[in-house]
Image (cartoon, rainbow, N blue to C red; front, side, top):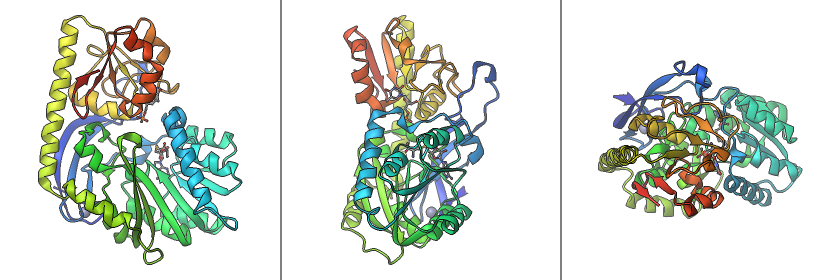
Length: 405
Ligand code: SAH
Ligand code: TMP
Ligand code: ZN
């Protein structure tokens, strides 16, 4: 039994995906066999309710200089972050010379909108290539991992931040104590630390099991984030449920006693009680559903192969690493995966070694079926690839249930 990274309590494992690769490192064909694997397993802390992984992958392996993910690769996410920036420009970032810090700014969509408004800003991200894109757009970026010392250093050199924002990054950082200590040092009095991450309630209740991969070290809930914030001297003062990435929660925290919590906190805590995220039986049912979805997906793909159908994948997502490696889906079942990210093309998917090709390869000729690994971008992708269905092609989805559409 492992111990909770937040409160030290015992963690009960509920699912073991076994040997899994680092999900966002795409080997070139000649690099196959050099990948790093680890045991991907998730458990539930009986004490503070935090869901977390049993083993940690080192941050240097997960976020190297050539980390390929680009936030701006999705029009939906570009709109989401532009709207988010506008919201904060009209609220937290008003007044005299506010300072904005973003943890995990990646290629800088959110940072760019803040910069365009003339607001003093600094992004922090270890992914050098992505950070260079943000820098080329004119934004200021510190290439490195945010931790306690970073917070102190930025405070000393640039002053206190009115808003520290982070999207899809805080749940990736096992050393939450150090991050909160850094933010604590960096925040101006009355300032806020806002972060948004995939919501455990959606993951469990829609069987989005592929949201479980190395980078998502924690799967946050309102209750577990409130407990974590309090452990590190913060209050949870606002929560907002957002539709992006299959269900995201935005948490607003402030140093203890500095802000009065909004009614959203008790309201969403009450809604969460209905989801029974603090009960062990929920995780037993989740585990059984993961097993049955995976069994059905495999048998569908094997049937299609036997019928001589041509099957491709769409979106070489991190999520797909969990699905393909756990289900044993290789190029024999899915010939190749199309992805618009240049950094992923002409490489293979981690562990399963399915070749990755540009989206143009999708149409020449269209396959009979395509597994939509980037299901969180379904609307955007299905709209782009309308002709696939018109030509008789069908999408395969595997969450909440396995289905062909
Ligand atoms: N915020 C973007 C990017 C999310 S991907 C979005 O929502 O689309 C996660 C990013 O966090 C990566 O760019 C990774 O390099 C960065 N990251 C990981 N650990 C970090 C840390 N300790 N400090 C700052 N950035 C970190
Ligand atoms: P994500 O699920 O982690 O956001 O990754 C989405 C992946 O899907 C990313 O590698 C880019 C790819 N993608 C496409 O190939 N075409 C598209 O239209 C979109 C939106 C994403
Ligand atoms: Zn705990």
